[in-house]
Image 1: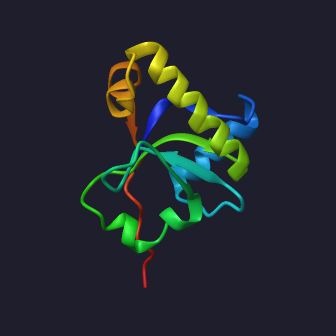
Image 2: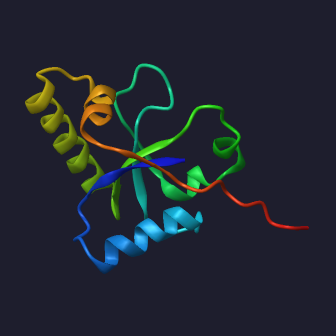
Length: 119
């Protein structure tokens, strides 16, 4: 899993956001956390997932990387962040190439690989 260096979020910068980011780094389950990712399936611009869904083995075994571009504490605010990302992309590139927008304007941070529990 990867994330951009300056996440889109409705959570105020500081302790609360840092705590959410630490949970992402440690792959800890978090109640009510939604992440906005670059599309995992073809034909989409962005996708919203409950973070706990991404902790399932299916997503960790995928060949392609999951790139987190935003975090939020509710589904409604996730839609607001999607709108904000779309507007920023249109202002910057004058088109809806969201992958290119993130590639040009943000650095990717690779999260450590998920550790498997010892049996």
